[in-house]
Figure 1 (tube, rainbow, N blue to C red):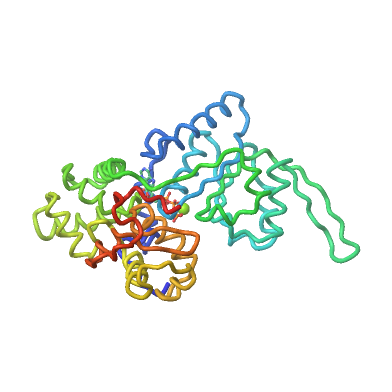
Figure 2 (cartoon, rainbow, N blue to C red):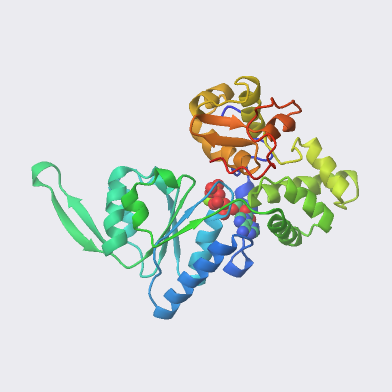
Length: 349
Ligand SMILES: Nc1ncnc2c1ncn2[C@@H]1O[C@H](COP(=O)(O)OP(=O)(O)OP(=O)(O)O)[C@@H](O)[C@H]1O
Ligand SMILES: [Mg+2]
């Protein structure tokens, strides 16, 4: 990525995966927020347990750092089933997938991360496996090739994707349950922070938690990361107590702004306002202006900007709202999108 990712990037950084593993909730009742998903999922799991059958295949869609991998592990734990993990890009050839499917044990949970990036032949093999618990193994090449059907153990597929829109319909339709993971509310992130603080033995007063939660871009991964940075700051500068002012000072030092916008978010807004007069401008043009892939702008930056009421997607392109002008300290033009509308109420239709 050309823009250096910083503190509030939703992607994991460096040795973060290890720390994340330690902070990951292990059971459904430890999983914070996403109330609807949690309730629906607990029904699916409970009824499967009662029938002693593997539950329907589960698809989880949502942005980076919102808890998809965590939830996949929880599903296996709640079912008391083993978990096999792979990812779309690792399944380049149908044979890669066949090797996994044919060695699954009954009831095993197969987690495929970034399932939208699976190669086509593997995808087609997966259709049959999901529906009939069967794979066709092709033996030989050319006109003499034959396919041998092979039964596989009933399993549960858990797929995760940041881009549900890219999944072909036949694949999407084979999931019995889709969990849409959304950004977290500030009070939910406060609970995430208190839980992590306990696990890390960090003293975290509620006002400090609130300040960190507010700037965490609606994302638990970012909340946990900011907590660690604020803790470092507090230990070195102020004898460990994370008051609101200490949290704010630490986050200012690390250039996390008051709304939790990261450098890419700000670059997108800045280009939209200063280069394109607030828009409308097409996604790819905007991406070129900030030196990023359109996918990165669309998946990483835009959902949060839309949610904050700073950017709207219109049929003619991306448009900055009046709040966006004000956020960058500029005066919105009188016809700015959403002028006179309460910020946050725009849904980016
Ligand atoms: N609901 C939650 N409650 C508590 N902690 C959470 C929750 N969701 C996520 N986390 C924390 O955030 C971290 C990141 O979550 P996770 O790895 O599951 O995200 P992801 O959606 O799989 O991200 P990616 O798209 O990058 O793979 C976890 O290590 C966990 O500590
Ligand atoms: Mg993940």
